Image 1 (cartoon, rainbow over the protein chains, first blue to last red):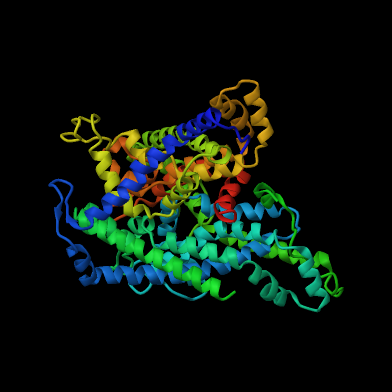
Image 2 (image 1 turned 45 degrees about the vertical axis):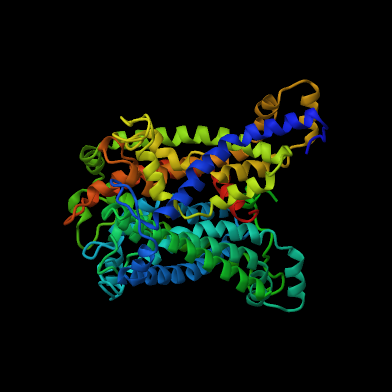
Length: 294
Length: 309
């Protein structure tokens, strides 16, 4: 607080402040909070965007939990998330350790590793659609040189989801690299010097100093990773449309299909609240588990 | 350490062991650079392949064994991409909505960020934390109501005052930017910045008789340029990269954005690889150039959304 004025002056400043935040508060009420409330309401209705919504109680939720496609989508999303998160952490931490070195031109490497982050998910999807192409794709061509493949990266139901995982790790590693890099640069140098005197080699220093000190950052990366991987939509729409055989249908893609292919807006709203519930439960549990281990 | 320093900083934490004289330092650095270069090549291979593909004539694009460097560089795929779809129009749509929403976003979120940092008022903390909490809500949850709001927005697009009869904000620029207009992240970022603004500056201006808005506009805002640049980049890239919302809020070809435009090269049975790669280069290049020019602002956005949060 700049000054602590009293009486009318104080009330005047309070009015000014309320005026300053009014646009943001109004916008958030109308375009964030009200939609959440109305989405919750819609989840208890049958609604196709043309006729008025009809109250059907818990019917949507019952139907969701009875539907095989929902469980398939949830399974796919969970596998996807469970593969992306650890891989992303390992790759991004390795990159961060590598670019946290005193080498001339290191900035160039940081830039290159970050480039996939500034590329939109749709552009990335198009690039990898071409790389993964069965007949002409670069990946199968390179594999053939060493006597492997060819693999039907996006056409094989056992493989498609994992192919999307590889792409996502490539796209996302640079983001977490920056977060880890910032955290690494905040670790006091003396800790390493002391450990070195005690004879700890670089692997032990990583395991016993760096990794434990990075735990809050890792927790943050996991929480944000859960939130983002569970909403995966763009690459599914652009690359596989949920196929083959629903092997890449994610919950995020299922919601879109329900709402805008089948016009079951009530059902889609209910699915989105199930998604919200899952994300909340996972992030809270994860934070608890990580906190308990301290 | 400020976040911009993180990007520039040359090594602070990990340190090579000083003992072990049997491996010369120079050799170790050389090995490291070599390894980094190999890694950088692998990581950028998808980009290189996209760029090379976009300049190859079809005969080399589909050649087996593959042709790495085109023997003749051709622009035919670029020409064809811009003929297949009105890409000029898509770029215009993305740029206009990106710049417009960025301007609105910067003004309103920094105004609120300033108020949250420098004024005292009732329910301040409740209001702030509610704002921040809305950042965490999956977009899927509010997608359908937002679509209904856009479609039934009163008195626009042929709609009556009750929002019926017309198409509302569907296929309009305001419709395209609706969910990204005033993001809570901007309030968070600018508040963080204004917390560091000395109170004396504000007091002195007040004694000189400056209005509160004047203090925000002429004193606070100019000092916040780094934060505003970060916010501008965040805001512009959000619009440029957006896909799900434009997908549901536009139906007319004239109102499509660049990301939607990339869909036109795929049909059910075939893909026009050459033009698709050319268009993908064109859509990706502006942001990569923006990134190379303003790296530290991009990085500050990542770090302030993370470590300080």
